[in-house]
Length: 140
Image 1 (cartoon, helix red, strand yellow):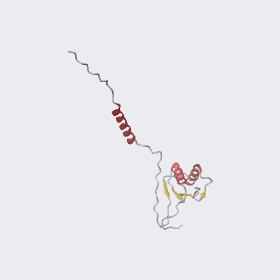
Image 2: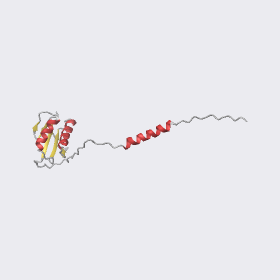
Image 3: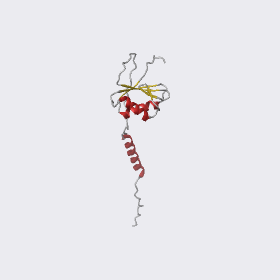
């Protein structure tokens, strides 16, 4: 009796399930990865009130005009660059990082100008920062 030989099946690795598993692992690691924040500056937003505050010598004020010009404690700066602003803030603070920095920006000032002032304060180690506001019923 002559038996027929069975056709030999080639052994192969299925790649589709393997690719699926790799993609699921990749997705898992992408979702579960934590990102490091390079720098963080906490901002204290003031509440607008009708009572006037007393002037305090431990307050340093940075005024930003609509054109992006800076004034530290009423003294206009030569240019609008970060090193100049940092130098002026360093002189006004005098090494006391516990002083309170108040940013008084024009409503038409560019966002970059305000961020530059906040960055200068952060680099100098000033941790008490507030941005002035006005009540909605105040007129210009």
